[in-house]
Image (tube, rainbow, N blue to C red; front, top):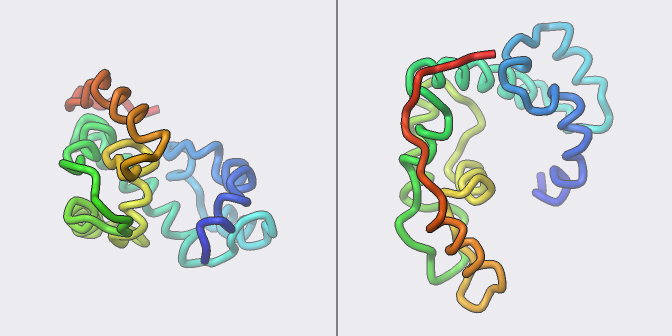
Length: 153
């Protein structure tokens, strides 16, 4: 499966999975799985669909245990940008192992690394990339989330 395929289907995924509201997705049941398996706009893989629902449930548990998802994920912030293009990092390997230990599925180090790129704990834009300094400046102004009382919707 290519990332381009996933990105091209992101609006369909957003609609199919309740605008990515993990509180809502955690309540999906067998009927929802059947509905999603018929949705040609997304990747129709039973194991992956069921993993999304499972991971939403694990996310709810994590909010209760950790105070917030952000506080947990930012503990794995990468110390420095790599000198070359990579698909994993020691931090993504560690985060992947921890998520699997907590019952998450389809969260290998490469997938976790891409997640970390998307949400901020990794800035791996290469020297000379027009975005690298912009991301670095934004990161300096950003306050890393800390644990706070859990609030679930």
